[in-house]
Each structure stands twice: as C-alpha cells, then as structure tokens.
Image 1 (cartoon, helix red, strand yellow):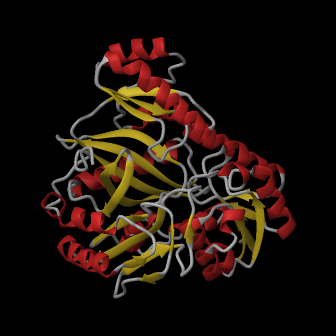
Image 2 (cartoon, rainbow, N blue to C red; image 1 turned 45 degrees about the vertical axis):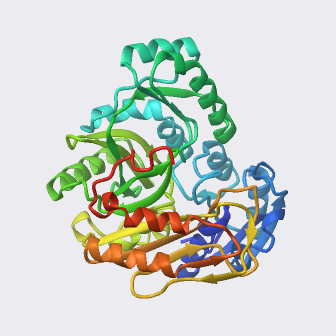
Length: 435
C-alpha cells in the first residue's frame, strides 16, 4: 500500500479523496492554483504545493508541475479524481516514467478504451448491444455521408473525454455542418482532441450506467446501475440507484453482461459502462468512463462500498476481497448536484443531518466561488429502504440545506424531486426540455 498520495484535483472531489486517504492511514499532498490557496482541500492535506495561476491550463492541467510536486513530496502515487487529467493517457504515461503510480487504468488501456468509436468495436463482441454509429469523422463531408447512411436524427460526439462536452444533436442535413464545427471546436478545447464520431439518436430514452470494479487478478464486479436521465444540455443534475425503469431480472442480466465485457476488454480499475435504455427495455451501449464518476456517491450509499478506497487498493495491486453475490444492493439512494449559479462568497453554510444523509462539498465559511472552474459546489445524497422514503428524506434535506452568499440551484432541485414525473419514476432524457 502507498504511504503518500498526491491528489491532482480540486473542489469536493479532492476533499473526498483526501478523507478516504486519511481513513486508510495514507498521507496526502494537495496541489492548488493561485485562486485556490485558501481552499478546503489545501487545508486538509498533509502537504500542499502551488502549481500555477488560476486558469486550469496553468495549474490543474500543468502535467510537469504536478509531477514535480509529487516527486518533491515523496509521493508514490497520483490520484487524478475526475475531469482535468483523469482520462489523459499522456499524463498517466508521464507518471509511470517518473516512478509514480497513476490511480486509474494503464495508459495503453486508457488510449484503447478512451476513444469511444474504437471502444464500440471492442464492445460489439461481448454480448452487449451497441448504438449504430461510426468511427471518427475526419471532415464535414465524411460526417455528412455517415449521417445519411445511419439516418437522421444523429448525435455528434467527441471521441475523447466526457462530461457532456463536444456533443450535438443533429435533426436534419442542414444542421450538420454548423454542429460539426461546434462539436469539434468544443472537443478540442476541452480535451485537446477535436475528433468526433456519429451515432444513431435513440428517442425517447433514459441514461442508465453500470458501476464496475475490476482488479489486475482477473476479478470484476458490478455495483448496480444508476439512472442519470435528469440532465440539462448533457450535464447531469440528479442521479439515483437503482433505476426505477429497470426490473430485477433485467438488472441481473445486464450486470452479468457488463462484468463479462470488462473482463474481455481487459479493463482494470473503477469504471462505468453507459447505456441508453429505450422504451422497449433494450440497453444500448454508448461509452465507458475509465475514471471515478461524479455520481459515485449514490452507489456507495446503496452498497456501503467505498469506491475511492478500492480505486487506491486496486492501483496498489490488492485484489477485490468480495464477490458479486456479497454486494448489498437493497434500498434506494438519490443524489442532487448543487451548483453555483454565479460567483460569490459563502457567508453561512448549514448542512442537513440525520441517518444516511451525506453532503460532499468543498465549502467552508469564506469560500469564494471563482469563474475559472466547474460550478459544482456540493452533492447532496440520501439513502433509505424504499424509494418513497428516500424521496421524502431528500425533499426534507433540500429544504434544510442553506448556502448563503452563493446563488445555487437548490430551489430548482427541490422542484425537480417534487415533480410527479420524477416522484413516480416516469421520466427520461426529455424531462428538462429546453429549460
């Protein structure tokens, strides 16, 4: 096991990783930008290093500075969290060259699985159904020919990265050129790779994902499904497990297929297989995230299994010490993402309490929200034995949560979970409409 880990991230996920390390008896190193010098993750870590200016490109994406900080601190491993460098094979390879363990897949595996168009070809032979699509479209003309062959409407998607960036819905040929230019530009800016591919647009549908843990000893388990259909502009707002749209038998089947699939493609680490679930109950594979997901917390609340700790153990070569049949998956857990609506300074924070109520955040009194980073400031997660009870607990917790000084989406989240479509579980990706 590692004795010291550098956390190459910021915000609530950096705090989450540092807390997991503390519970494991592992020392931590924080890196921070000039804008984050007073951040909570910096205060909680055993050591900290300023690695650059406020822009992410100057700091949290500055590979050489992060490696230098890890070497100076005597860390053995780097945990990238999610976003930033978490899916960057070049950075993972740079860690390896400097004798550091990247807590995630091997760089070769990341390259192979990170290209969504290539990954779909690998998945086709595993028993999972793949959404009809293409490899990377190098030009607008190539994209036009592929779209005509697939049939409109189609989705343009970035080959690299995730988080809803580099995605455009194209309903007819007249929209394709502009959408292609926008998607490639956005993908290049977000991931350093502007390549995009096309896939058939499945409508109506729900976004359902399966959480996987796999070690280097050939063991793999699926920790259930999460429904992530509550989205605005491809950004998730609410996640829950299990999905109210998936029956027990259907869940057992797709979980078994997912476990076999990750074994066949040789994945090691914590990953997520993402699907569209159509109106007929068919699962269509979309992509795989080879990192920790923002919404990993709902799975932890349902199963009691700490995904961050297991990421670290797997990277250290420790085998999974439980089997599929030993994973408890009874009850219901729901997460609401709390986002800042604009910049501001926190004057007062009141966090709801009670059994099985969790608020993952980087906020403390005096925290200033800057314009340089993602708007996520916290995640409110609750668990109960039934979905009905979970909903009541979540509504009460949202009413009790107070974040004064920073405009947030708390009121909007309360309206969502009080909506009859959500309460009854009859929602899909159209829920947010154009709001």
